[in-house]
Length: 126
Image (tube, rainbow, N blue to C red; front, top):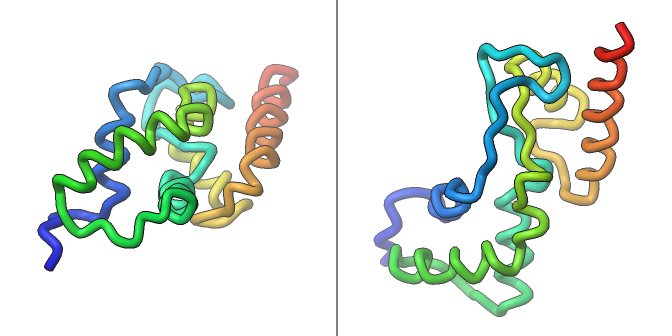
């Protein structure tokens, strides 16, 4: 029986937050209000693939999750880095997910990054 009180991804996010470099304005428009964080790579998808690669069958205890998250964060440090974490205003964050879906595949991450950069460049031109 599982003693996890939350979804495993919540424990992962709690752990990786310590390395975040949160910006104080929207990456695209520079707004300083209603800011949200956007991971370029899905932490859930990264963890699913990491578990398969490392032959982790199930995570059913807090102690196991707390141990696994350290290895996971180290193995996925590039994808989880601050360079792949964007601060967006609510409007731009909603627009991103409207275009790419509520949950998009990590194979789409580079397209999303290109879109973010193009949106920022368009705002700077105006």
